[in-house]
Image 1: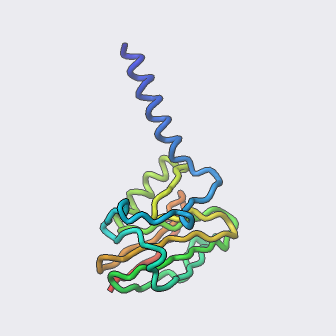
Image 2: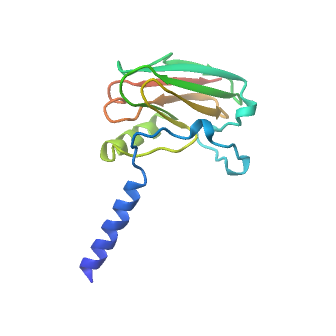
Length: 164
């Protein structure tokens, strides 16, 4: 009986982890249909309606483990389309969040490096391609964006969003 319980727990864990596999496929970010009824507020804003984006901010990601620009400023309540272009030769991602949330997620990524993301505040970008995040910054403060692929965050692939 104990062995069965262990096997069931192991199977559940491995199925759950497999559901987060990064693989080589991009995220559906740009194709994501906006559904206001399903939008969730976070401590750093909420998914934005593409039709209400007031501007586009373009960022480059490089194999030097940097975002350019590394800092952006937005107005509280503004909906912005962030377009992250991977200018490097390796996979990068852009994830919005608070400093603490990103640190916690980066630690989880070390344990599960193939974790897949399909959240509106994340863009997983192959070399030479671009990914989009449409975000409404509903709260004033300083937030971050980062690449959480193991080693990238630790190498300094982090940027700052100031919401005024």
